Image (cartoon, rainbow, N blue to C red; front, side):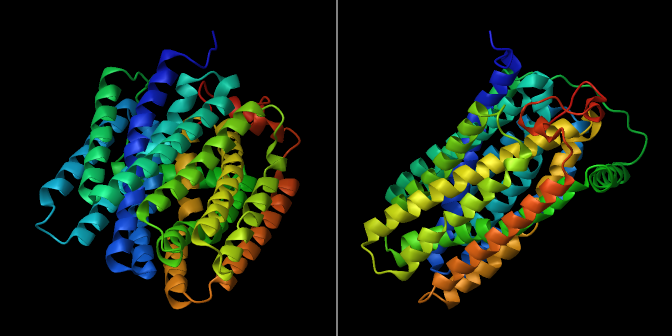
Length: 433
């Protein structure tokens, strides 16, 4: 029997399906609702950016919690919080401003995910054998992509036919199911860490220790994280704002089509995760920038869509294909990077380091969403330069990433693809997140 398919790991996968489905439904529907109601890409970008702020602030704290607090309890508490948030949304529907309600719901959602995701990543080494960590990370990524595939499609159909309230009800039910399953099924080994100081001082100390580790012992990881922040500033923000504006306003297609476009993104992520799982022993982190190059080039056809009077359905097909390829390649790069961090980081730091990495990598995304929201409103009649500028910026960042990895990775960088990690990464029983 495959050692990876043990009860603990399988149970985490099952609850992830439910929780991430609810997350994907809300992340898709609420910003699109704001765009539908206001017609403003700038306001949509502002709402999305505001929702990101608690995520960026709380993610490092989530990493500290993931290393020091019972992971199972964290996951159950957060799913319960999200289920209650959905219930509150439905109870307040019709009594307060619905756009403001969407903003509040998104803030809670992103804040919860800032703690939830580092916890799940930090749980992987506790429930998967060391030789299976890359595969386990790929499977977790595939579950996220699968939920992102099904969630927006179902959310788009329900939203397009019945409105926002049933979408929130479906998401709330998914969170509730996940919380119950975590309490009843999930088991994650836990050893309580000693605490000899106040919570805030402990958090600050842990974050400082994580940053010192990245800067002093693994500077190549820190440099790569900062370059990924550049990708999120440009390529990611362009997709998040540009895709719904292009589908629903420029092409004039209904919300259901945006659901299928989001599904294409998720299917690309799922495909990328599968490919990494299959090719894990052949891939190395040195090769990873190739995927960033391809992801950037994949956006070029979108410039054609924005600059050529094509039939809306033809243009939509080109857009969907571009999004699929872009996300597949971005996911392959991401999984290799996360696996490398898991294998190179001492066990007592792994949750904190991954959380800090996530926070740093995503810190530029709200800025990008604000900028692209304004650009899409101001240049609605001529968006080709926006698309081409995004591609050019992403290509430059990919080239810089290749240079950083070529110069900074040790000869045993194959650890990111499943080969044994250096001894320094094996100082404690657990080694990844």
